[in-house]
Amino acid sequence: MAFSVIPFFILWILKKPYMKKIVVIITILIFTATSYAIKIDSSYIKCFDKKTFTIKFFLGLKSSELGLRNNEVNKTLKLVPNVNNTINLGFSYKWLGLSLGFTPPISKRDDWKYGKTQKFDFQFNAYGKWFVAKTYFQIYKGFYVSNPQTFIKDWNKEVYPQVPSARTLNLGGNFLWVIGSKHFSVKSIYVMNELQKKSSNSPLLGLGFNLSQGSSDYYFAPQEWVATHVLDTLHLLKSYGIMSFYPLYGGWTWLKVWGAGKFFINFSFTIGLGGSFGYGQIYYKNKTSSIPSGGFAVSTDAKLGLGGNIGKNDRFYWQLYLLASTYNYDIGKYYKISPLVKSSRLGFGYRFFPKRK
Image (tube, rainbow, N blue to C red):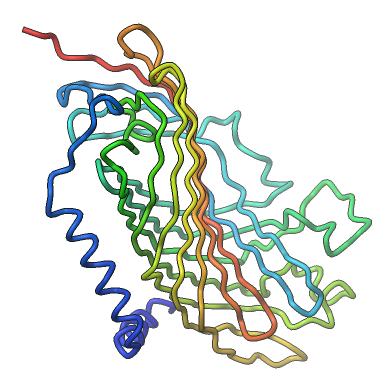
């Protein structure tokens, strides 16, 4: 199991002097940020009453995809799960927020065309006055090839090639300090319990990690391709397990506001730099070989948010945001593995402000 690489990865970090220094610096910065009270500039940010009760309705979609670039032919196999939108109804009050969701039959994609996907997908995002934190734990089984024409030029079938035995696990997250939080409110974008009055931007600084593991009974390729001219001369990936840590994670977030919060658009981009190690099992000419993976690792996060507050008292609001995290690993000279974690939400909410005495 890929989880067995975790203790060895921690020991690897501790043996690298430069890695220890970076971890210490980031830790000091984070604890320094928590050591003083954040002072909000009220000309930029409006904080709603803590006793405000909010109900919300939203459509959500979560996914875990996998890109496998074969360096022998410089082509990427894109494996995508067959997932569906969910309808959610929730509420929030003070620090507590809950929601329930279900998948409507009308949103389900055809299994005969894309195959069946079994999944467990937990994603949690926390937005404080001075920080942004993200964690995810995903287990997926069953994928289809979304770009078959890359390998078969004249491909025109209605049913997509499928890899039903492919299984992936992704576990990770990051923690980012919003350095300019005095004038910048991440809560106004994602939680909507604050309101950004003016445009602003801020640097982001923190750290992150990722554990990726995958395996397949018949390789990460459609079984009908393995014994044909499509893949018969290539090294085939059967399984992998990689752990990475990003002690240097930084970027920027921009927020443009119109009408004192009536409409806003936000874009955030961060890049993580660190190291990784693990393995990959490659099949070639009736032989399976274990190939080490490790070295320099890069991770990227991109977020796009739109929204606005409606009415004189800003009781109604709407929001749309898209989140994507990518990781890139090399399996020797044969493969570049790129797990992709995605989520999206389109929501509407109504705030019940407490009555003033």
